[in-house]
Image 1 (cartoon, rainbow, N blue to C red):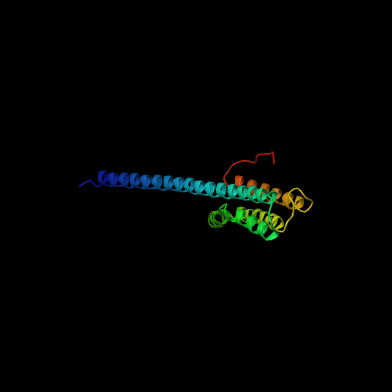
Image 2: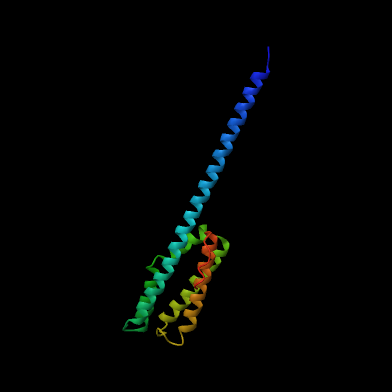
Length: 159
């Protein structure tokens, strides 16, 4: 009996199965990579949006009239909490790259310093809040640049 045709068939089948498995594995990797990128993009967007909303909320409260210092303090802190920033921050810590998490944490703490100043009575636009606002803007710009790099998006060049 001639074994050559049988061996050729078996070899061809093994190569075909191997190529199919390799192609499926590569396709799975690409899909997982795309999914991970989308999850990071969503978390980054949520965090940046929450930071922005918290900044706007505490500024609006600080611009308002308050009967007492304790009422102002409570209102500023509640405005900060109500934006969902803490939840967005935890998501960032769970899935962000180390560089993005560090930059996000710096932006979060810069905003918290501004919150604390407004809660303590610093007027909006005063010499007390200007350096805090500058620090926050710088931290936000750094964070955004790192997020864009992590997502494979080039720099804006306008910040």
